[in-house]
Amino acid sequence: MHSNLFFRGLSTKEKTDHDVTITPDYDEQLEPALDQRITRSFDSHIIPWLFGIWLLAFIDRSNIGNSRIDGLATDLKLDGNKFNIALTVFYIPYILVDVPSNWLVKHFGANHYLPGLLISWGVVGMCTGFVNDYRGLLACRFFLGLCEGGLLGGMILYLSMFYRRHELLFRIGLVYCAAPLSGAFGGLLATGLANIRHNGYNRWPWIFIVEGVITIAYGLVVIFFLPATPSNARFLTDSERDAAVHRMGLDAHGASPESKVESEKFSWHWVRMATLNVNTVLQSLNFFAIITPTFLVAA
Image 1: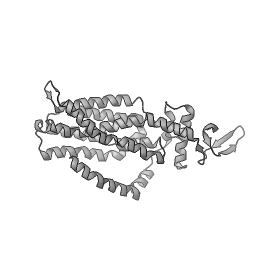
Image 2 (image 1 turned 135 degrees about the vertical axis):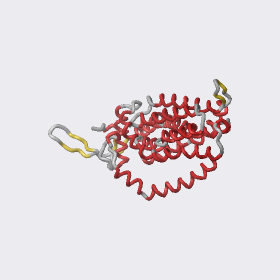
Image 3 (image 1 turned 45 degrees about the vertical axis):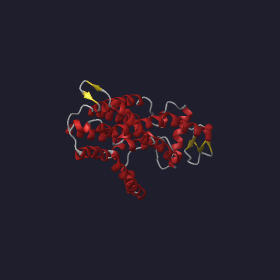
Image 4 (image 1 turned 180 degrees about the vertical axis):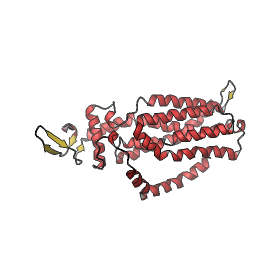
């Protein structure tokens, strides 16, 4: 039974032989002060961690460009075609695992799965520093794409478990701001790391090794702080957790029969609806047209 202290509006009462129960009424609204307090708590306990994850993702996928300047192409005997193939190999598994990965987010819990991806590509990135031929570079790029492929979709799905639809876009924008920041930060970091010469590994390997170690360490920290769902967010009080769960039900307008995110079941019905939706198709084509010139210039 929800406490009347944090709801405004009427609820539907059903009398029984023993007690009075309150059935969910999606016309109920949370008290504005409580609603804002919950949102601020999510902003301070979730967004910074996801920002860091997305920052490291872009640094680790783009450090091959910095490494090329610092001797990668020369040491591995890469011409322009080989280097471009190494860039392309990353996106093959990246695209293929994007949608299926979201099912794993639901199955394992985003609080474990997202840091797990982070640690995995940190290991792959670190191993890239030890490759000594073209085939080794291709293998590392392939597995890097495999590990990073489910990240963006997984983070959006994760945020949708905590924020309502009208709040979601702004939070996604905040996280995505890490992408342009990674260009400046990653370049400065690579410049410093490329000066390291130790034990036969000179310049470019240390970009991959050190950045990989940083990514692994960050993943090991994040796994202890990200909440799985609103109902087990330890930084909220009991009443705030109840209200956080209920407000997601209000946002769904009763579309889901489950009251908690973790109780929802996977259904291909919703996959088909999302895939065949005309808005999804048009937005995908629009994003493809925007991002393709960007990556052509970057390459």
